[in-house]
Figure 1 (spheres, rainbow, N blue to C red):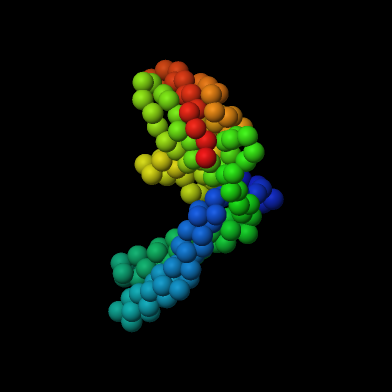
Figure 2: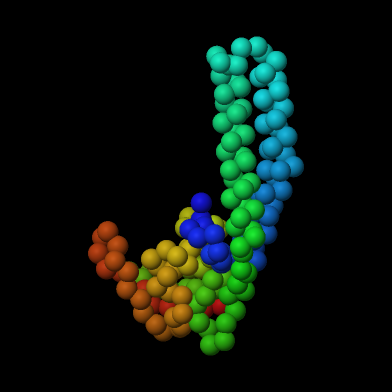
Amino acid sequence: MYIKDKNEKVMLTKEGLEELKRELQELIDVKRPEVVTKISVARDMGDLSENAAYVSARDQQAFIEGRISELEDIIKKAVVSTGVSSGGIVSVGSKIREHVDGGEEEYIVVGAPEADPKEGKISHESPLGNALVGKKVGDKVEIEAPMGKLVYTILSVS
């Protein structure tokens, strides 16, 4: 669960919010009815106390209902950031290019629910994302990593 406090706002990009809305609709329109059907079929098999299909379907249902609740909460508390700021200052939604450890890397700073480091999407709440927010081209940030201190130099913000 991404929400620590019931009044906390959740920063998201427009794309991230749309993706969460699509996931919610998929769960409500497709996954929920599928699992209800699985439960019904499993019930028809007889003794529920020893029915692995029934137990599995109920577990799936609990997961789906929990995720639906989580997504509804995130969407309700979402604040969309465009990433466009005056003066090229890094914010949620900014695409940044930076120099680190002899090479260049590109990231998009996103809200926590949409973070995916493998896709180059880092959360504004992560150590790197948190250090970058509010910085501009030419600024350097230092991050403590397991292998030692890394120094990132911001090359561009868009």
